[in-house]
Image 1 (tube, rainbow, N blue to C red):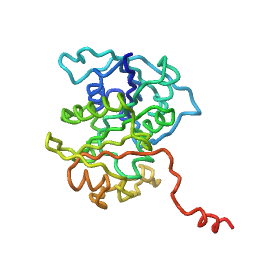
Image 2 (image 1 turned 90 degrees about the vertical axis):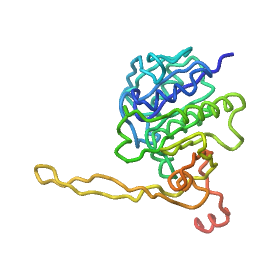
Image 3 (image 1 turned 180 degrees about the horizontal axis):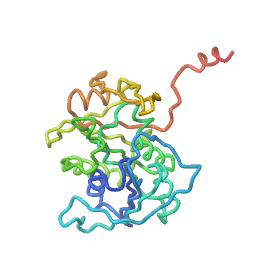
Image 4 (image 1 turned 180 degrees about the vertical axis):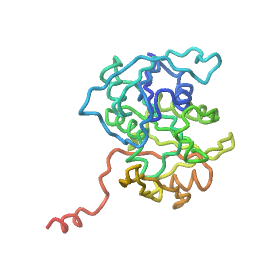
Length: 272
């Protein structure tokens, strides 16, 4: 029976990264794309519960010859909501049955550390799928400059990430994820070649030093702009160290269970 694959992202339906994601798995099964209509970076696993979610069927350009993915069977839907909204609508409103795989990405810009796990819409979408028992892969590609994260129509070279993700996706479709892993978070360095090393990593604590800029509107009223600078290194074995320090491909297995592994007696002392 033909496998079923759902693709989403947080950069929007027209992002070149989304097209690269489709390119990577289009020959592995029937592909359905359900993605936000516009940029939704940084919304984490947010869900629209106070307004309706509107959906439009769309046509998308691809990275293949003649704007077509040869042999692909692709339906694409634009959702005026979050990446998690897109997954929920895809699972329960569009697809006839649950997919065999959820691919979220390719995000324009790295998603590293515990910060990204809780704020990234790319990873949030993968978590939503994982919560529904669907093996999920979140994929991100490092940018040279942070401003490039919002250049969704750039012409980055996705050829190596496409081949790598296709190989991993095929194996997940065949045998599922390893026990204890609910999703994989894959990050590619900006310059990836056939010789780029792969490292299985854990999450670093942080990837940004937070900065808040105070500015004033034309009437003199202050407002604030949240910003940050990259922390370009962390402990050996972390995703930040692998990608930003060593230029390696990082593969981080993630579990949905965030329960701390602590001595419960210590917690009992805290609560009396």
